[in-house]
Image (cartoon, rainbow, N blue to C red; front, side, top):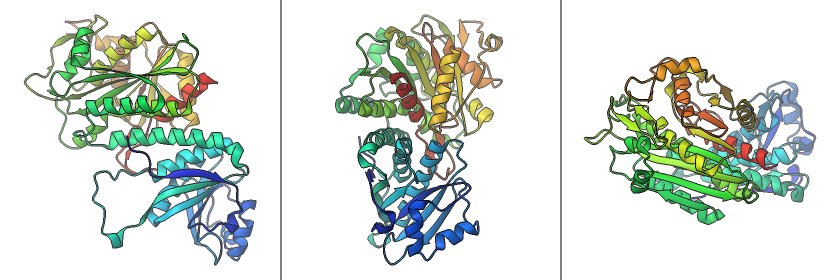
Length: 495
């Protein structure tokens, strides 16, 4: 399990006296010269103040201004806009990520980051953002010729008024950054490398590192538990499916745990209902829910949160073959319900059906599942917000608030019984899809049939777990969603 390349630290120092290749500064809108930069501005003959007075830089979100430094002090100064202070922590994290990406492109090797008047929350968000911006997937890339290489960002220092007081915030931000980086690396790996067995091995490494109990079930164990829905998806592939459980017992003995559940389709062809060839390569990202659970459990283990948490992932691939399940088949889930297969590309909900029933044995205080489940959710909400559904309005509100605090917004969609008519089956108890109309809602209603006996929330992250375009703060590819929401929710229950 490789670690992110950048090391983040805190330091109390005068920015004007720093011998740093790059001093990056978060500036809000409307932009004003921070008092911490007055000496730096003097060394630049007032260039910063003139730029702000002329409104050449306004501090708007994602806006940047780069100046070459003076003869002494920082070699370069970069201002990064955080926008208006509606969600300052999220703005700081985004700006820090943009600064780290700039540092990568510039090849400076190390950088210094300043948030004027930084408190603990600002330090935490800064650390997470710097790690997000510095992250790159280079495992399978041949290095460029030596004379064309730029130094990767290896170290980032956050300037703080008190190093001791900032230590806990730095540790928390780093832990969350590590969790995000792990989830993004797993998601970015090609499907021939990130297999169900690899996800299980990653879970074992997390367990060893943080003293979590890890259980891995393969095909024989799934058969013994009569997980017919999960096994139906896996019957077309030679790879052994894996149900993986990680248990963090940081809370009181006997206290009901929070259970996090993730869909782990390491590659999804659609099966017999095969997908179009165009952009099918993106279906390596169909395991982002599982990656989110693993990343969150890694962060929770690092933070040693005083709460009981169980992470469950179901990993397999959905392949067409002579043994693959097909439209018209009826399979029996572990709960006993019979499911009519209408479309084999609606496979994630089948895996989750058995995982949600499996979660019941832990007598959970709450269950949150995350899955790249439906294209319909992308049509409804685009790539900005995750779809959020649930059986308990208070729990839904809690999840939405957690996501908002960390910059992973969600939007609640209805689970009205009226929509159940769309998934009624003529030959079984329920169909695995109700067609295109209200597709994300009927998928969530399907899951609700198996989330019985506990408060439950489903997050459809099909539009937010990865991006096909550059997002300014992070490049095209996996975003790390829903690691932040998971960790923030658990922290809220731990306080």
